[in-house]
Length: 246
Image (cartoon, rainbow, N blue to C red):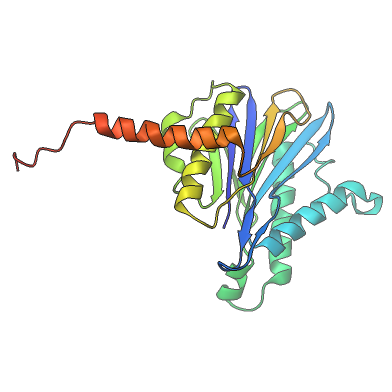
C-alpha cells in the first residue's frame, strides 16, 4: 500500500509520499514514489504513484526515457505545451503499460492497476494538479477539491478536510501533511517511513525545497507526540455524555 498527497495552495503546490511497498508482512521494501522533470525557467512536472509497483516503475521509466533519449522524445513531458497535455500524455502512458502487462479477465487487469498524482507549472500557464486513474482519464484540482490523495487515503483525510487553508504558508502545509501521514502510518502498517516531500512555488519553474524525512527524525517525532497529546486534551474538554438523562 501507499499514501501520497498533492496539495494546491494560493502560493503553489506541495507533494508528499511515503516509501513503503509490501507483498505480504515478510516482504517489505522501500521505493521512492515521487519523480520530477524540469526545465529551469520554463517548467516543472512532478509525479507521485500508487498501486502495482511494476506498473508505476514502468511508467516512470518510460517518461524518464522519453525525456532524455533524442530518438524517444516524442511524446515527452518536456515538450508538452501545457500541464493539461502532460496529464493526457501520462494517462496514455499509464493505460499503455497496464494494457501490455495485464492478462485476460478483470482479476488480472486489476492486479496491474495504478493511480497517479501529477502537478506542476508550464510557462505561461498557472500551476495545476491532476489525479490520473488506471483507465488514463483524469480530474483536476479546484477550489472545491484542492487536494488529491492516492493509496491508503481514509485515515489521513479528516485532518486535511478540517485544517486545510489555501492561504497557509508552505511550512504550515508541510506540518499539516505530516500530521496526516502520522495518522495514516499509525493506523495502517502498509504505509511507512521514510517520507519524501517537495514544494513548488508558483512562477519559480524549478524544484523548491525537498527532503526525505527518516523514521528517527526529531521534528516528525515531535509532531506525532504533540498531535496525540493535543487530541487527548481536546477529547477531555468535550462535554460528557449524559447517561442519566436517557
